[in-house]
Amino acid sequence: MPAMTVPRRVGILTGGGDSPGLNAVIRAVTKSLILDRGAEVVGFVDGFAGMVEKQSRPLSLRDVSGILTLGGTILGTSNKANPFAYHLRGNADVSAEAVRYARDELRLDAVVAIGGDGTMSIAHRLQQAGIPMVGVPKTIDNDLMYTDRTFGFDTAVAIATEAIDRLHTTAQSHHRVMILETMGRYAGWIALYAGVAGGADVILIPEMEYDIEEVARVCRAREQGGQRYTLVCVAEGAKPIGGQHAIRQVVADSPDPLRLGGICGVLEQQLTQRLTSEVRRTMLGHVQRGGTPTHAFDRTLATAFGAYAAALVADGQYGRMVATQGGRLTSVAIADVANRQRLVSSDAPMVAAALAVGTSFGVKDVEFRFDGRTPSQLMT
Image (cartoon, rainbow, N blue to C red; front, side, top):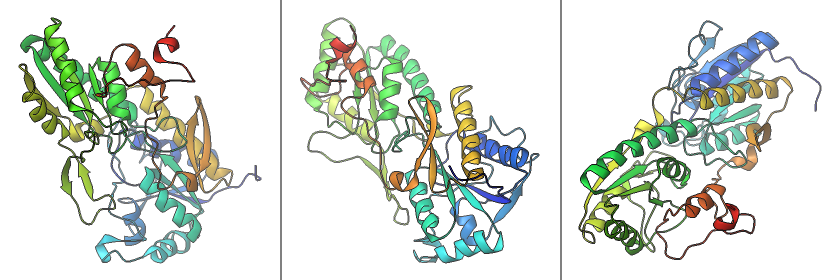
């Protein structure tokens, strides 16, 4: 490890979509750098847009006091502010302006970027352009490579689980098939964990194309078996075998123009045609990413991530992203995370656990193995 350095001025920004725990990270980074290193901290307004538009503000201990439990981000964020293809200037490359402002005008020794795969991609390119960068993994989707968890995921799962719990009672009362759609883009982590936690009978995720006839078979089997209701938890990126994603909106000036959503409506129509039970749908949407972070897990994880990011800055460990692996904090190269997604794999322990308790993934005769063992062998 390089000799300890003393950072004088450090920037911080929140990029991409909002997520519970952002303010906890801002607080931890700022307090750690000020109290432990005597550094000045500068926050960029609205993510990378602040770097391009020269919008920043100093952060003091008073500025970050009392924000641990607040949702959102006190700095603001944007998912349309890539300085290498800046949408407000016709997708022009204005990265040189961003570098000059951060490095030459603000005289920052480093910038801490809090965000998901898109933010890490930009951070990697800015590192190459001359700004020392440290990344903090943020996304409710939990789909960043080389980290077991991202902050915000636990809160999203808790919200989705509570929704399933509430749908459970109305499903039982009215003998309905209730469909809950979660967020997650092309990764099924939220649907998987919330589905297991809420006792969903069917979990549909993007990593496994579903067979609508198999989903209907599960529902009919429950009807005929006397249970008379079924809970389906579906990720927004799920799609049928040979089918297409459900697209809610196309945003032309976004780095990710396709806005997924509406698969719960497709399922409602398909199952209504095949079942005697009444079918209803619920789409959670942005409820999952708003509000205060869960009382313990996301707050402590975000705080630990922020403190570790500050330590990476102090140690001169640039071009790195904070990560948690096997329950321990570590760091990985931002370059290895950029433009990549961590998807649910066939040997994920939670998949094996779901199958072992009889949960259907909408695919007939599917069998997942964990460490070379079947789910039933795993649980014995």
